[in-house]
Image (cartoon, rainbow, N blue to C red):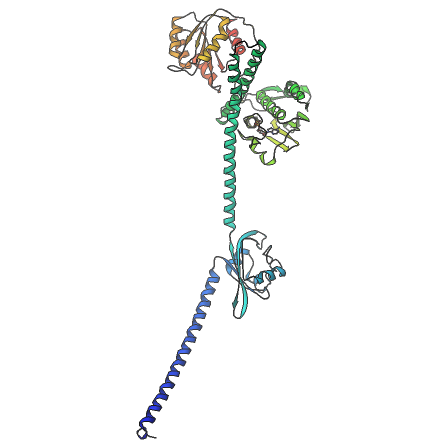
Length: 546
Ligand code: ADP
């Protein structure tokens, strides 16, 4: 039918139908293009996921959630664990044996798959070459391609764990050193204050009127003992300072070690047996063959210190002292059945100012210097010092020294603390005491009264020079070294320009190697370290005037 033959109504109806058809076509086209877009988006997201998977800096492992079979693994995990791609794919996760604990077998896998989300902050994994590394582990179950999969994300945290360990170690070390510092300060304070307490306390008590002669003597003995203890601490501090500043010298001579051991045995026997402890010694070589070249003073100091410690830290059993010959070394030992030393403190006790018991539970006397001095001496003599000990059982300290050693320079300083009274054999000397400290001046004046006809006093080097110039008949000068205006060295130098005969004895409180040489160089005849011991002073004076 021609369009012109159609009625107006028919035409409107047909137009409406056509319009409807057009719409559905449009919808169809729209739907097709939407589908295409989704597909494209899926492909794009798949590509994006894949590239993330391939380039991730964490390990990723995809498992079939039903069977536990590995379906995918990323290159990072392959590198991290050292297995090849094929060694992972289509293997059951527990078969490759990387997990030491979780997923180590099929049952463990069943436990894992029950949970949607699992996290471990620090999990050990075993690499192909048997190394254990630490990882952070997260697993999620999700649906992919109609299949439930488990994605395991594995982050290597070994470096972080290592740093954490180092930090913890450093923290523990810092806390330990803080405790040691406090223990050292408390210990030094205790070690110095205790004898000072004895000295000042009993000196005060001596002033009390009507004190019986017996009590006086008792208090004086306590003051002397406390003074000697104080001097020991100071000597130890000076020895350690000399060692640390490289000023300690080695003085080699021939020495019979059996004689030394026997002397120490005889010296300490009464004290040890007085504590109810048995004391034995064992000499390996016959007396006539026990002569070696060494620094006898240092060897004596080491042995004495070890025996003193054995006595201090033992209440029962036996102390044994001896030596064996091991090739070209002599190996000395001091063995006790005392309190022993915790294995973790056995290294530290050789450090200066360190004691095994830093909590000071037992409050033993000591500044923690003896062993560090002994160790330094042993090393100067070419040997080694070590300990074998068990807490509660006892300790054996060993040290070696070579049988012969090269002769080195000598250090002539000797310090004796004997105070037995010696009868003066010289008298009527004209003496000048040069001293800026009143107490020291008084002490020397009292010591010298009985051998003097006149005592003059100077408070510094300048006064000393003047007094000497005005008194050419002066016999003896006691010259302090450290003084204001002009020191003792300079004063002696100037006195020597006009008086070569007067005997000058220098006295210094430094007790350092080199003091003596400096004093002699300045023109002094002798040198004494403070505290001045009367007998020592007298024997020096007698050497020049008897
Ligand atoms: P101290 O003056 O404290 O004795 P040392 O340097 O001689 O100093 O010794 C250091 C520490 O070693 C002592 O404080 C003690 O804890 C331990 N020590 C040394 N010798 C012995 C020993 N024979 N038995 C047990 N502990 C010992």
